[in-house]
Image (tube, rainbow, N blue to C red; front, side, top):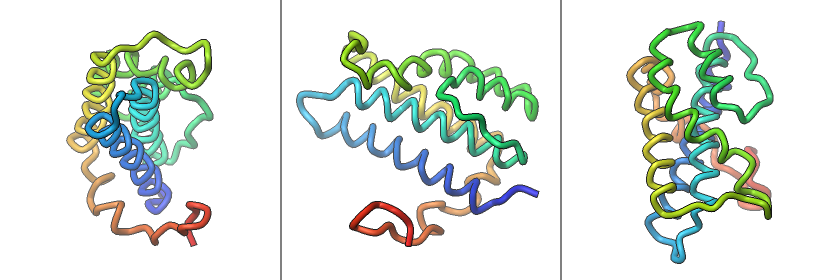
Length: 150
């Protein structure tokens, strides 16, 4: 039986990353393309890992969304619909965070946001039980000092 609290923590963290990416795109100028793309990749990664956790599979320590999505396909062939989004986001997991980063433009951030939102909406449709309750309301507030849970 899946540890639902752990599954909800993955969802909570994914929601954090997606909200941060959306907030940065809407408010910060100049727009930090690399950070937005990175947070979109992180959101998609955590959504996929929540699915694996829900199926009692320990998520591998990888940022490769293609690998994670392939693992999720064991539980539903419909995950094949996310192949393009996973392909588009995978490179943003590491490369933008280093000085030899990628040449990104505003259009890349919009596509990254669309891809991350597609992964979320797909999971909401395919695995609504993962979103049964609002994960943001279920977890205790974070400490203002170190960002951990009390």
